[in-house]
Amino acid sequence: MKAILEPEKPQQAGSKDVFAVARRAAVGLIIAYVAVILFIMLPAIQTYTIYAHHIDVWGFKKFEHPEHYGLAPGKTVNMKLTSSDNTTIGAWFIFSDPFYRTLPHPHLHTHATSSKHIPEAVGTTPTILFLHGNTGTRAHKLRTVLYSSLTARLGANILAIDYRGFGDSSGHPSVQGVGRDARAGFDYLVQQGAKPQDILIVGHSLGTAVAGLLASELGRENVHFRGVVLMSPFSSIRTLLDQYYLLGCLPLWSLKHGFDTLSLVPDIKSDVLIAHAEDDWDIPHTHSSALFNAFLDPSEPFAAPNTSVSTTHISGYGSFSQARVANRNVALLKTERGGHDLGKVEGVQDTIGRLFGLYSAQR
Ligand SMILES: *[C@@H]1O[C@H](CO)[C@@H](O)[C@H](O)[C@H]1NC(C)=O
Ligand SMILES: *[C@@H]1O[C@H](CO)[C@@H](O)[C@H](O)[C@H]1NC(C)=O
Image 1 (cartoon, rainbow, N blue to C red):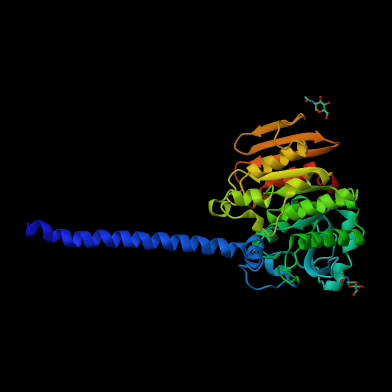
Image 2 (cartoon, rainbow, N blue to C red; image 1 turned 45 degrees about the vertical axis):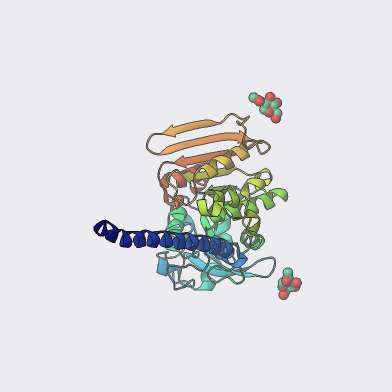
């Protein structure tokens, strides 16, 4: 008996330990979960998680020298713009390659000599108002390579702005605030002499929500601009957060930054291109399908569209769907590959160039 009982003692003690540990772990998990929920509900934390505006992996902010990021000398003008509520935002104006090639070489530029060419540039080639996603600034490496390829391949100038709270811009981000900043960028281009029809609004990721705000505002004012490109967009931030398990359990009334592009669709009256990669791990491409359907029929975004949509499948690349709705083009490009930073895909750039008539302007 002793021989049997004796080993039972440590076994019992062992299983007690296991239960105690399990109980402690469970309590710990619950506390951690509640802590995370409370943490995320804090408005300041929401601001940081959604915009991630202070995450700048490159650390140094040499906005005065875009040449340090590989852009040609004097091709970029660093500037400050003022939003309608007097917030100061940082921006880069990057000359299109066709225009830049008309400047003397080597281009011994100063801020004054380069900026004086802006009115001529916006009168000569179309301009992209680029609205970047969250995290980092206009000088982020993924963005500077995009400026190089878009100014070359599409022959368009780019105005890249940093929203309030990002980079060298002042203030703190908010939905209304970043919308004002985008408008400040648009108005600056018009002040420099750009025709609204020569301005293409391009948003990426979080920037698509900002593009939606600007495009709908201009739509309500009957301003006819070239069009809007939504790259790797989300339909609304609630839908996006719903798709993450932990965040899906969030009390959603606590959401401070309620970007909701889907609800703005009826006010966006320009040509629209929505582009998304099926291997985007940040924002599922189903968001783009929802947006496309909303553009086809804003009154019934979830019904089968009452519009004839022509779709072309390209083996190994993706599919391109196009429809004519209310006298404008609405298009959806889904690529098989490309990830979240879809703008680098040549096929996507080509679709932008062709759909918005940028290639015809280059000849
Ligand atoms: C912005 O600044 C201008 C000039 O300093 C001033 O007239 C205007 O009232 C200010 N606007 C706001 C919204 O603060
Ligand atoms: C589509 O909608 C229009 C009116 O908006 C209607 O006249 C037409 O019959 C509808 N077509 C189909 C196929 O449902």
